[in-house]
Length: 189
Image (cartoon, rainbow, N blue to C red; front, side):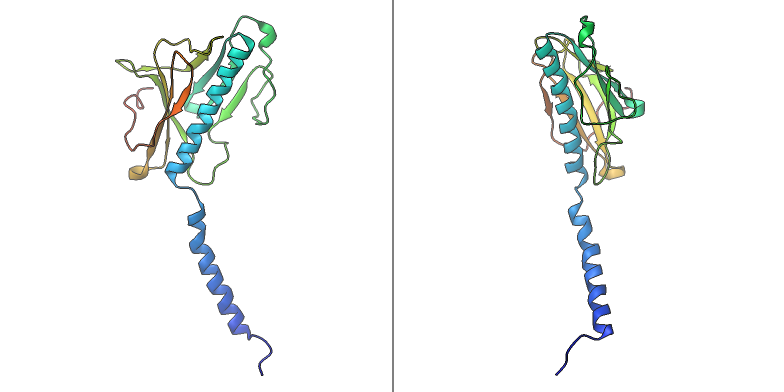
């Protein structure tokens, strides 16, 4: 009657478990499209937050996009200086002040590929580069045309894009389906 396992049997079992674990790890990482959609929803939520602050406080708030730094920030842009101090946020950023809160796409939690601020523009003919999205007291933007924030993720043939569209009348942001087609103004804005 045998009472245990030999060292060889234990080592073979550990090797098999290691191979199975290594094969399973990629299955738990989100693909580029899922990761990019999550980033699009984060941007849409931040736009909704700025809009909510504008309607709640009967003032103006804006997000300013800094493409070269792959980030954007929120600040009060209305005339009532008492509203310049923003509500506290749980997201920490080294550049945050009482009057300005940053969202850095490179520092957002991610499991796979990161996201990049590809372009921000008004798609009216011809597309015009935009650096800010400002919301007024009624929730609408101060732009007369739709504003589109384009994000990208991946590389080469696997590079994907998502557009976050802001309706100028309602101020509501929608996330488009993921696409492999680059935005027309991505190289120019």
